[in-house]
Image 1: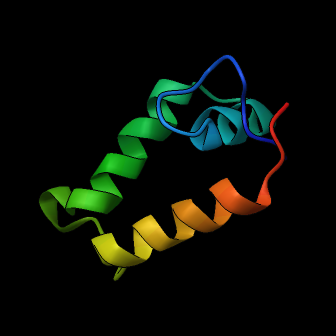
Image 2: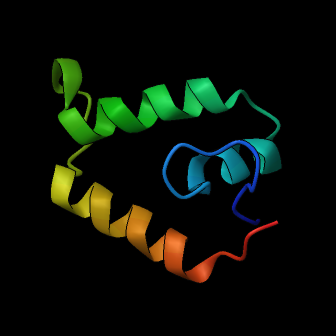
Length: 65
């Protein structure tokens, strides 16, 4: 799994993960926003702070492709 160099908004993390999973990056970004903002109570117990920490860890550890 790598960060995307061409499908990126912030760090390319979600674009790279979406490419690895074979799904739309827009769908994955939408799911990320649901978990970040807790839309409709769909956080699965993950706070917005934890979601950001997970994103930052991926940003730091994944190489750009």
